[in-house]
Every structure is written in structure tokens, then in C-alpha cells.
Amino acid sequence: MIRRYLAPFVVPLLMATLLSGIADAQRGPGNGRGFGQGGQGGQHGHDERHDEDRQLFHFLLTNHEQITRTVRQLPSGVETLTESDDPAIAAKIQEHVRWMQYRVEESKPIRMRDPLFAEIFRHTDQIKMVRVDTDKGVRVTETSDDPYVVKLIKAHAQAVSGFVAKGFPEAMKNHPVPEEVAADPPKYSHPAIAKYGKVVSLPDATQQPRDGSRIVVDVTQGGEPDKLNSALDKVARFVNIYRGAGKKPAQVEIAVVLHGDATLTILNDDAYAARFQTKGNPNLDCLQALHEADVQIFVCGQSLIGSKAKPDQVVVFADVAVSALTSLVNLQTEGYAYVPLGK
Image (cartoon, rainbow, N blue to C red; front, top):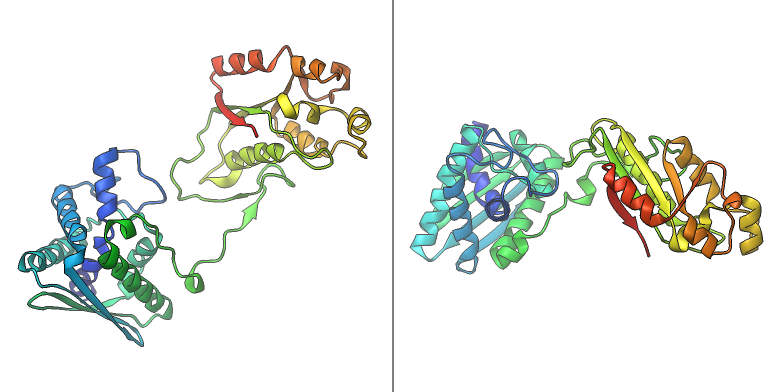
């Protein structure tokens, strides 16, 4: 019974997927964003009906000003009425229903990128849908016995009303899961470097860390002498991303090249304190942690001498290079991807 009733629910719901379908057509495979919910029809939801459905969604959003919609709040959900005085638009709405029912019955969903709609699709087995075709469109009652799903239904109804009111601009937005029913907030962790570079684990996200990656971080950013240079914390985050932010840890080689305003962050405690009148070098603890995580640390010799510092004032675990230029060129020649951290 639930499967039979489900298709009408998808009528307003899948109007939101228009943007996804159009974007796929414009950008081509591999250029999506976010977490996405692919189906059996392929990573981007491409199947024998994809092009036709995309055109249908396009038509509905293009003609949103000729569509009216009302929402009546119910204790366990909503009742919506979506109609048009234009017979052609009303017919397209009904055509849309038929094919969305086919997608549900054949397990061929359109890829969902909007967090709210993706969350609703995960709970369709808890939604009861009753649909009645009208002369001008569709009346749908959406209810659930689960309080969480009821809140999702109501949030969805509000979002779809936005599509009808605004068309494409509203369809370009992500619609979050309501805060009061959202999952627990993400927890930060430090997979490899305990005190620096906190990350959130995102095992289902796209563009996962890959084994064998090589990164050279070009650090020129300065900061207040008595505080940690925030660029170093970002390097620690890079390490933690590869060690534990994805679905599984990935091996990575990271090298850091310090020059410009970041040059003197590499001085030992005594030299740094004498230069900046501080109690020591606030960057050394993070630099030591990076070293222990197998990050290579280089400082530009030209910048160092130009700053009136000496190579023997550099901490023991860092290397003085001839220049930042030669370091960056050499490392990129060796296959390191270039990542700048400047001002």
C-alpha cells in the first residue's frame, strides 16, 4: 500500500530535482557537488527516462507563476493542493505523477542533492500518501505516525511552496533538515595530530582522500608574534583530513615551504624570543607535531638571511632550502600538488 500511495508524494518533491537534472546536463558527469543520492540508473540518476523527466521538471519550474499551491497543516502532516488554470500545465503535473510513480516502483530515483529531500527519501516507508487528481492538478495528503517524519513532511511542504513561488532561484538553494529534528551536530576529532587541525568525519562525502597523494603547502602567511600562525593549524588539518576525515585513512606525503611573512615561525625558542620579545616561539609545539606526523618542513634560505636570521637558529627538525622557489619547483616536479596558504 505504501508504494502505491508514494508516487503522488513525489509530485511536489521532485520538482526540486530539476536543478540537479539541468546541472548534470550542463556540467557533464563528475561535476556534481555535495553528498547526492544516486540510484540504479547511474551515479547521476541517468536512465532511459532521464532526459524526458528533466524536460518535464524544467517546464514546471519555468511556468511556476501559473501554478497555485495551498498547504493545510494537519496534526500528523499536511494536505497540499497544487493546481494551474492552464490545462497544459495541469496535464504536465499529471504526467509528472505517472512517471514518478514508475521511478518509485522500478527503484529508479532521481538523484537528490538537497539535504531535506534526501532525508525525506530515507523515510518514505513511514509516509502515508493519499492522492486525488483534480480538474486542475493534484491534492495530496501526507501523514506519518513518526513525529520526526511529520516535521520533515511539514518542512518539505514549505520548501515546495517556495519553488512554486520563486521558481529556479529557490531551486538553486539547499534546504536543511530542520534544526529541531536534525541529527546530532558533527563531532570534531584529531585523528593524527592531537591538539591542532580539528576535522569532521564525512565518510559519505564525495572526493574522498586518496592513497598516494602528495601535497606541497606554500606558506607565506604571517600573524601576531605571540600567537600560533593559523596557517600551521591548517596544515595540521590537512594531515588529519587524510588520516581520518574520510571513509578510511589514506596515505599522504605533505611538505611545507615557509617563506615571506611565515619565515621566522621556524626559529628556535631563544632566537624567536630575542627577535619578538616573547617568552618563546608559540609555533613550535604545532611544528613539532607536524614533524612527528612525517610532514617535511622547509624554510626559504633567501628569506631567512634577508630577515637577518641565521640557519643555525632554525629548529633542528626543519631544513633550510636554497630558496622557496627551488623547493616548490622541485617538489612539484616530483608530483606534489601545490596548495598556497598566503595572506
